[in-house]
Image (tube, rainbow over all chains, first blue to last red; front, side, top):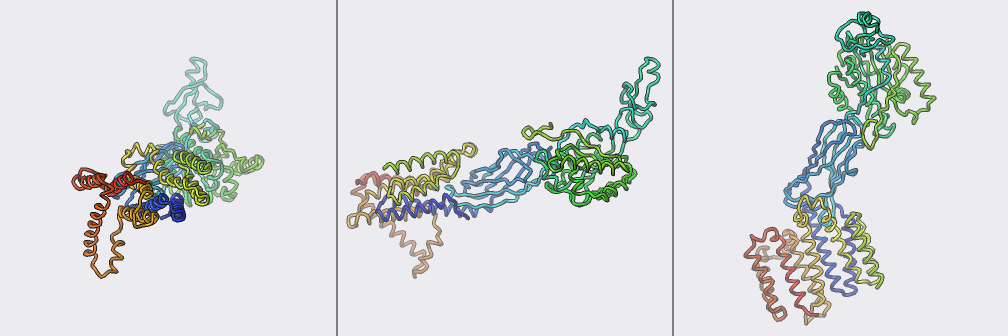
Amino acid sequence: MNITLNGLVHLVTTILMLFYSLAYRNPFILALSLAFMLLFYYEYKTFINISRCVENVRVHRFLGKKFVEELGEVDQRIVIENNCDIPLPRVTLVDILPKFISSKPPKPIFNIVVPPKKNIEISYKIKPLTPGVHDIQSIAMVFYDALGYFSKKITIDCRESIVALPLSTQLSIGLQSFQRLMGIAIKGKSIGGTYDLANIRDYTSSDDARKILWKVYARTGKLVVREDYGESLAKILVLIDFRKHMWDIGVPPNNLTQIQLRYARSLIEYLAKNRCIVDVALCSGLVPKIVRNAEKDVVGAIYSLMSILPIGEGCSSPVSVFIDSIKYLDRSYDFYDAVILVTNPITIALEYTVEDLETLLSVFTGKLMIAIPKFNYNILMEDKDLKTLLSAVSALIESSGLGIEISSDNLSVIATEGKSS
Amino acid sequence: MIIPILITFVVIIVFIIDAVKDLDLVPPLVLIAVIVASIMNYTECYYLVLALPLRYIINTLLKKNIVKTLGLKQVIIPFIQPLLYILSGILIGITAQKFLALPLDPWVAKTVFILCSYLALSLTISPSLLTLSTPINLLPTETETLSKIMYIVAIIIGIICTIYTLPYTSFYILIPLASVAVMLFYKNRIGFIWKYITIILFFLQLLVLTTILKP
């Protein structure tokens, strides 16, 4: 139990009034000082009862949704249950939100009155600012007497968690290289054979000559090709490397973690849309977390990965740890047509060694590609250093892998609107 | 005279701002006002201490959301007793200024009256029976016997006092008597006010005294 500033001032002024009234023989001030003394005693007695009652107060938290896209709003209800026979005349409730959750109102502090044997419900909106699992753990409550002379603060465990999925966008980019290398798209460049007809269009250079419809050419003099869904679905393993330091690079809602996760999700969606078999491994903690056949339910796969991604944490193993994910996925190394490692230059510079990359390349020979999202890396690296690093990594990867793909898609969002720009 | 008016004016302005914005500026300001009043002997500034409890009450009542959700009654109930104590304090003060008891010095008579009033009023703060019985344990008599004796003595003193004050109070004595009758016969119909009936009666009697005593 603590005395507040209001209570302290009340006590001091009462004593001053008492001395003054006795010194100047003023009956009115004497009566007033005694009334104040009585009031102080009454508040003390009331607060003792409130302190006893605090143990019988229950708080429950309910979230409107269990998962949401980052920057999406979720309704939250907090129910305060007063099981005592006395009212709680003034309670200040402070919801202790994790670092990357904002709320509407910006400060979740509420002053309430809880009548005896009744429940009070507070509703407001929260917004996860980053992808991952956000654990909302406790609520602080400060109990006061009616006039706010005494206070008691308690922290109540009130756990709930919400999973925020990264936003995604349609990658318009230079995934040409993926298409060329893997034959995953339906541009007539697929591996050959006629299966399910997808489209008929004009011939363009680099189209497979076997796809030209010669009968149509003979009839019309126009070169057209048929587009088929690929004869076999490309099998891709997406490795998402994710490090602790990435949380502190950039400012939410556009820090490096968010940009990289948005890019990874967009890439998975792109691959799934193009009928690839996609397995995903995300390194967070010591070992990678895996999802098989993410193409069947992309949102479900992203949810599974994000639900084990603690905010502010990251992978603490070398990048070669991804090799183990093949075992956990119950696949063989030869199963995949391509392996895409989603990472960024800062992580490459800080965490990777040549040996790690060589180990990866030795396992995924001819299949490894490094995909890098667009981000303002200049905040930590000079342009010259960035180019040197990327050319060195590119030379290494291209020696026995597929190369580097640097995205040109802008994945940042406008904070005020919360929409993908 | 200008300084007390100036201080009062400042406190009132800050009081209004504080009640609306909930900034907690009134307590330190009142403390300063009281210290200045003590040093400079400005009795008027002492009335500003009333701002301390009133600020909190007004601040809570101004929270429209709370009042709308719970209803005014639920919000007001915790403040009834403190408000009655403040009003009683003011009334005791006004009454005490007029109070005289012939064999005693005027200041002593006033002090005795104020102290007796507050001792009686303090009994409304549900005192712990255990605390009250501690000094009684020191006496050879049993607590139960002593409480019966004190109960009878209290009634006798009450009757004597009523007879003693009858020449002054005349027919006004009917007001507290009527209120006691209401309390006894309509106890079940009064509802939640029953809890506060003792202090309300005390308050009414003080009101009667304030009216009938002449300076």
